[in-house]
Every structure is written in C-alpha cells, then in structure tokens.
Image 1 (tube, helix red, strand yellow):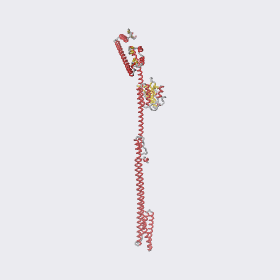
Image 2 (tube, one colour):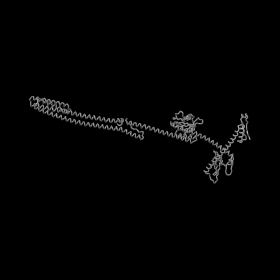
Image 3 (cartoon, one colour):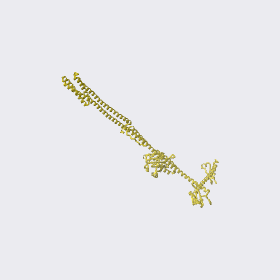
Image 4 (spheres, rainbow, N blue to C red):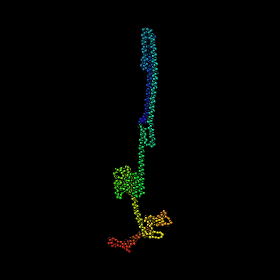
Length: 626
C-alpha cells in the first residue's frame, strides 16, 4: 500500500486523504439525515394517520351518540320521525369508511369493518322501530329499542377500543421508530467511526509514505557525508520524494564517477610524476656518469644500462656514425640481445630504419605500434618489441649517432618521455664527444710529454756532456759523461735511473732518481751509518720531497740558462741583422751576410750564390773563408 501511495505525489496524498475524509463525512451525514428524516416522516405519517383516524372515530362516536339521542327523542315523540337518527348513522358510516381507508393495520381494519356492520344493523333497527311503531306494536318497539340501545352501547365501546388501539399503535410506532432511529444512529456512528479509523489508517499510511523516504534520504545523506559516494536510496514511486531520491542517486553517481575520474587522474598524474621523476633521475644519472666517466666505451654502456633500468624498458641500444658517415654502428646494447648484436658487429645504414631516419632528419621518431611502422626494421634478437623510439645524438651542431629505446608494451613512449630521452641523448652525445676529445687530448698530452721528456733528456745530456758532475760525495768527484756514467755509478744508481724509482741496496743505502718532467736527469745516493738504523717512512718522505724540489730547482736553473742562451743568441742575431740592414748596397749586404754567418756559427767557410738570371745581369757569387 505504501508503495502504491508513493506513486502519488505528496500533495496528492495529503489532498486525497482530506478529500476521502470529507467524502466519508459527507456520505455519512446525508445518510444520517435521510434516515432521521425518514424515521420522522414515518412517525409523522403514523401519527397523522392515527390522529385523523382518531378524529374520524371520535366523530363517528359522536354521530352514533347523536343517533341514539335522536332515536330516543323519536321514541319519546319529541320528533316526528327517526330521520335525524338515521342521518347520524349514515354520517358515522361515512366516517368509519374513511377510517377503514386510512388504517393499514389488519386488526384495526377488521374492527372497523365490524363497527360498520354493527352500524348497518343499528340502521336496520331504526328502520324496524319506525315500521313497528307505525303498526302500533309497542311491545316489539320496546324490544327493538332495547336491542338498539345495546347495539349502540356496543358500537360506542368498540369505537373507544379502536381509538385506544390507535393511540397504542402511535405509541408503539413511536417506540419502534425511535428504536430504529437509535439503531440507525448507532450504525451511522459505527460507519463514521469506521471512516475515522480508515482516515487514521490512511493518515498513517500517508505519514509513513512520507516519513520513510525522508528517513531513507537522511540515512543516505549521512552515509554520503561520511564519504560513501556509492550510497543509493531506494526509489519505489514517482512522487516528489522519489524524484528527490532519484536526483540524490544521480548526484551521488555523478560525484562517485567524478571522484573515480579524479582518483584516476590523480593516479595518472602520480604515475606521470613518478615516471617523470624516474626520467629526471635517469637524466641525472646519465649526466653524473657523463661528468664522471671519461672512457667513452664505458660511458656508453653504463648510460644505456641506466636508461633501461630507470625507464624499465625491454632494450636500449646506442649507435655511433662511423668515420665515413655511411653506417651507424652499434656501440652499446643491453641484455643478451645487445651482447649478441655487438659480437656480430650490428650496424644500420644511415638513412634506413628508425636509427638511420633519426640521424638523417635530426629528430626523434616514435613507433607506437612497432610492427606497423613503415620505416622501422625488425631485429631477430628482439622479438618482443612492441613499441620503439629512436633519438638522435646531437653534439655541437652535428649528429654523431642515435639512441634506440624499445619496450614490450604498445604506446610506451609519449612526447614527455621522448623529450627527456632527447635531453639525455644530447647530454650523452656531448659527453661522448668530450670523452673523445679527452682521449685525443690525452694522446696529444702524452705525445707532448714524451716530446718534452725527450727534449729535457736531450738538454740534460748536452749539459752533462758540457759540464757538471756525475756525483758528489765523500772521497771524490767524477766527471759527467756517458763513459763516466756507466763506469762511475753503482748498479743500484743505474737501476734507479733506468726504473725511475727508489732503489734500496740494504737497510742503510738508497738510490733516489732526480726527475724533471718525468725524465730522470740524475740520481741521489744516500747512505746512513751502520748505527743509524733502517730508513723510516718519515725519512723516506722527506727524501722524496727534497729530491722532487731538487729536480724542480735543477729544471728551473736549466730553463734559466736556456733563456740566457736564447737571449744572447737573439742579441747576436739582432746585431747581425742590424749590420746587414745598415746599407742598401746589394754587394755590401751580401758581403756582410756572409761575414756574419761565418762569425756567428764559427764556420770555416760561408758562400752566397745568386741565380743565373741575376749573374747575367752582373752579380757575382760572394764567399769568405778562413
């Protein structure tokens, strides 16, 4: 019933309840009024009929009494004839006939008929008395008179009985109608009580049909307020509360959907942030490796491993363009596939495949569906590749290679990932270039060091051959020179000079090489007395420091001497040049040049020859000798 009521609007329910109550009341009141009026009408009809019958009976009784009086007057000879007595009987009969027509009670009708018959007999007696009296039979007249008196008395008594019965009938009818009225009143009261009960029940149903959905709304709102966005309120009708519940459910569903979408977006943003954080960490690791590792091969291999681990990829490989610019050669690859491809010298022609395309076009290329990319070339060692991206390695305005990243899931690379990969690729390219330059600079520096050492050794050899000492010590001085060096030095000194390291003969003797620009220019031999004990670490450190400083000082002295010699040479050259430029005469210039060359270089002879074209013009050769 409640569900049925909830199909109606709240307004319709309230209005319908009041309308039903009004209709029940309105229906009960007319019935009560009609029944009351009907009973009153019936009672009034009975009263009216009985009253009229009573009046007619009383009139008939009066006429019967008048007829007896007139008959008595006739017998007493007061009146000449019994006409008036007979006329009164006729009127009494007329009254009784009317009474018979009014009465519906069979008993009373039977008594009225009996009265009419008696009146008929009474009228016959009057006629008989008149006839007998006319005949002069007074005895018979007396007998008829007595009979008429008895009959008249009987008629009067009967009329009184009928009147009394009529009055009793009115009382009985009144009592009956009153009882019926009371019964009907009780019935109406019962009907109205039933209507009231129905109204109360209807009111309770209406109240329940309103309060229950309101309670459901309250419970749903509280659950919703506690964070249960999946809360739904039962909808069992089409009233305002049901519409409100539907709106609430729709709102809750929309909010739940929005919240789920928001959570999904937050999760996606979190994943994106985590992925970008991983990208940034990978970029930082690659940058750190680029700044810390100067070996290009080790840098490349470690970088691809970092990128694969940070991006959680299936495979990462790095290609470098060869010297001819025709092939992109695999230089590093992750996993077993990378090892196999490196072992077989895997390479891709520049301009072909995603690697070659990326190098030629100097931009990244993404294959979200690897199998359907028209440029990509599949590799047998990587059968699980589903998506791939190739990123060029750009350094100082040129492309030195490309980075390939592959994953076993579709659509693994978006623009953000490729942007980070491009940054790492550029960093890596610069680092590779720097490593190459560093290797080249190291080679150049090593060559320069070798050349500088050779020059230093040559200079010291010249100094050694020119002047100096092979060694200074207690007991004598040995002149420098190859022969003296080999003959005058001890084996430990020669070993220290050749090895460039401290040589210990025993606990007391040391041979320490003197170095200048990594070239051994001499040896210091130190000996402690037998009572001096072994060389301590502190003493060895002090010896190293002093010998290093000795080497630096000797090198500085050599450089100073070289500088002085260059200055002297420059002065001599400047003087010679000044003498040569002191004249504009060709013969004098040539003669002065020959003289200065012979003098400066301490030559036995110096000659200047001019070309045959100049000789034909009169210029001879000039020479000067000792």
